[in-house]
Image (tube, rainbow, N blue to C red; front, side, top):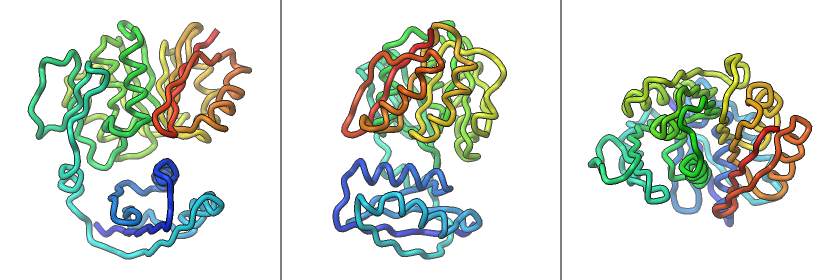
Length: 279
């Protein structure tokens, strides 16, 4: 399979700005990223690539930083070999040990998760995933029905399953993420999780005790009305994938008409995760 490689170079860019750009690129089909001096490389299937979409993404950031890019066509890489070079085990709150299949097990930790991310987002290393995992570790999930939106590798659903959730639904609009979710559930012995490829239309017609949504501000705001219809009264919802200002206030305002009230939030660097509860 052939790919498009886009090389991005910046004179100056903040880490959070680069993270946000990568998130937007992911929304238009870029699925693998590699840091290089002065910027990063982004890869996308040749048949998926649209330079017009790329220009539209970059236009959103034209007031924030200067970016130069170069496009080239390449043969497919061994992506697993690429991420294996940099994937290190991760420990969350001294309770959860996240590792790849090629790392040794650490049974001393209460929860161990084995992740084979391939090209999917969600190994726990990104600040948003870390904070969402912290919320799960701090929350009583035993016996709860849980929806994981924008699930990536399904790492959040898998952690909830290991903490005793009764049933889980994991949804992502990326086919690679969907396949990764199914494979990672099997790797971790999770048998009570259903996975679907799609967006808000893929949410089953049932009620959930907890919703996990680590996406981005605009998608969250679009999907909150649907979340409100499937979240039980007294149910909790945890959001991440956005910044404190102005994003958090925008999400609070969107939730309020649906009786979904802000509880608290966490912050790592520029990224935020927030807890809400439904009346």
